[in-house]
Image 1 (tube, rainbow, N blue to C red):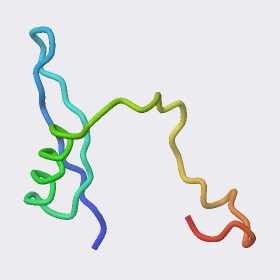
Image 2: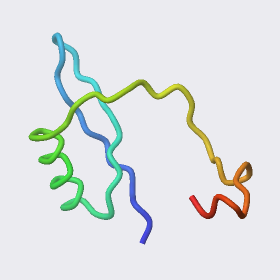
Image 3: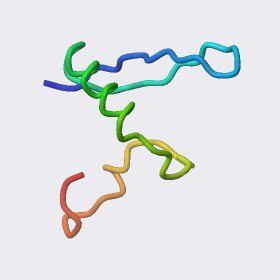
Length: 63
């Protein structure tokens, strides 16, 4: 089954902000949120997003 997109709200500097979290079901989203609380860290900046499948070749394999 494909993951669903859940919205996560959080408070920062007096504002309520949201981010997306992908999970199969609500309970799994809660578990992933717990994992973010305990092990999450910023690892880089997302510069581009999109479907890379059309650019892939048979030599690389499936993404």
